Image (cartoon, rainbow, N blue to C red):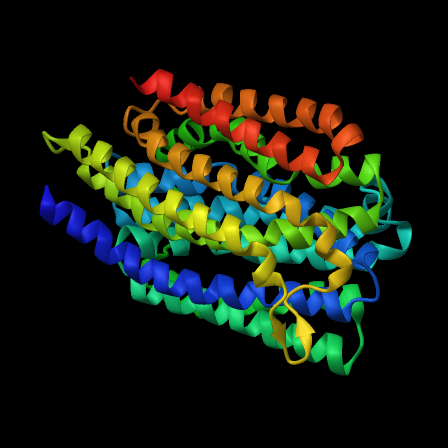
Length: 414
């Protein structure tokens, strides 16, 4: 058992270092945006569009990444090439169709999501960000399944660094504002796909296996409602907050929500190593004992981080970087949401551990109910709590939804 935990720890460290560096570089965009964009309203538009991108990422992937993990790890049907090529071909075709529709109907879509008809170009950039991100799903999953954590981490870091540099150039030098943010995202996503092409060519062959594809869909499609519910829990508060308030409030909320990055780092780097780990460990006789130990260690570490950050968050935002505060003083009114966000991420991590049993037993349909319950709580909670409590109400609605999701999963897996 110790060897298994040691391997998980080693891979978590690799993913963790790259994730910490990458997320920190991404986090630097928060003070950058708050100080460079003309107003919180502009940041609110960015937050709103990226909330919709998060939803569409689920549609573009339609469970193929998880299905690939499940079937490629055991080779129940077909060989390695077929298990890699079949989902990749499927995602390429569907993503091309979806992005083409979004591109040519960009202006109506911009009006539909409430950012204004003048932001049709932003929708176009977003469409192709979604396209390239979807094409990267299976190659990245392949690297994780092969335990090639170093290469995975390196490409992810290059994506983040390129995005950061492009933001600096396009917003500072060319003064492109909101448009520059999405151009940066598109170029960095395309670059990431280009870096993955050698990995793709080594495993890809135009060998689309129909019976395997049916099993992939049967496993992956039930994950869509659960994944959409999961995304709703993460980002639905932004559109609702926008509908009940304005872009400026959304911008302030987004900037402070991002301060939860330190807990998000812990959960993210753990998740990258956890999924392939529990799939390969599930056959061990003492698997349940190992999984229980993992949950204990995670909660101990996360609780310590929660306490430290909750006590010192106000001191943290007052730090000056190149003459500017960590986030502009105009955004400090939202600091009260940070401890709530940190706590929500702890429950996210608990859910990550508990979901192992569902995947191992191929009972992915259960996730539709647990995350669906969380999503309903989140949506209702936002509409109930935002009017009297504003941003704090939105944060508590998110926390409640994660508690419901983790609690229901805990009851099911016992």
